[in-house]
Figure 1: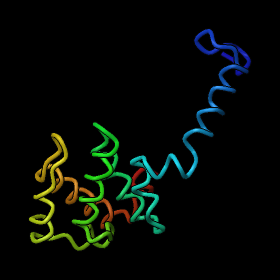
Figure 2 (figure 1 turned 120 degrees about the vertical axis):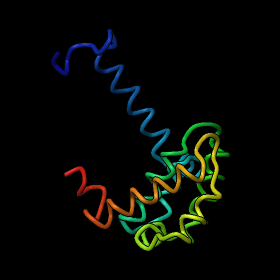
Figure 3 (figure 1 turned 120 degrees about the horizontal axis):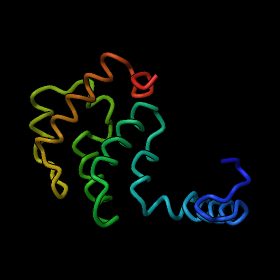
Length: 132
């Protein structure tokens, strides 16, 4: 299929117009503030963004307002320093996150994620390096 052929019967120009419209709708500050994607946007350091984004993505099901509230609670448990929290996570930190619950994602799940993330960042330095 070339780029000029229809995609599922949709002409290229119509698809391009639709995608541009969605880009403008979702890639703006007013949408981002009320969406779970705002969670990693709060951070400037790459590792903090990666971890916040990964943890937020792990709980993204349900109503957006509840996802945002749960994301805030989860970041509060990390003292809003996700990378430092992950790297220094020991038994005390795992007890701290064991209190977290979002729908079917519970404290035990969170503990496994924290330990897994600690391994990734200790061994590879970033999620990007794991993928590369």
